[in-house]
Image 1 (cartoon, rainbow, N blue to C red):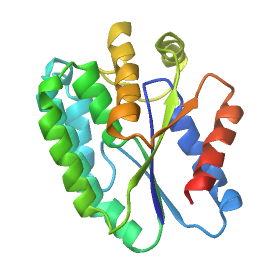
Image 2: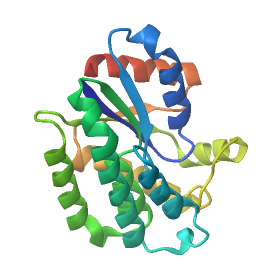
Image 3: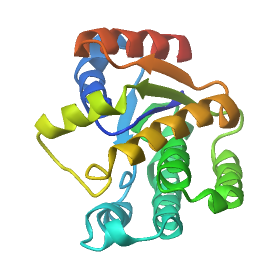
Image 4: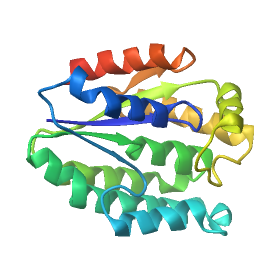
Length: 213
């Protein structure tokens, strides 16, 4: 079993890479059953309702970093209890589109809610206690210059939210927050250059997953 989080700023290609992994998983790893999920909103209908409030409510863009932080953590704990922990206990691989690194990058760094750091570290301890013994979160971070990422967002089809529409400075802070997470919060997190083609990035993601399994 393994618990892997694919992280990165908006427009870095996480959703595309998760889709490719899901489509090709049976050929790549035929002996490993995998559950693909996302945050916020994965695991249950209640978690999805929290996602809708945090991302798509008409006033969500005006909410404080503390309010969004609380919603993201609530969704995460529901996600853990309703999907992640049961799947890991069954010996399955779980791969999620975003997890705890996103909260550090978006709420503490992007939204400049540094006062939330004590709560952030406390919630990480709760996560460690909820996971099966010896299990840890393995993190892959797709890294891309925010200008290039925002260019991708402008031509992307599909769901968008108030974070997608924020200033380039916000997205730069998110990128720096992910670097800070990798260097000081979770030193084992792995950065992947997301500036290449979809297939090039996919191959890099697959190779790192092979080492994790």
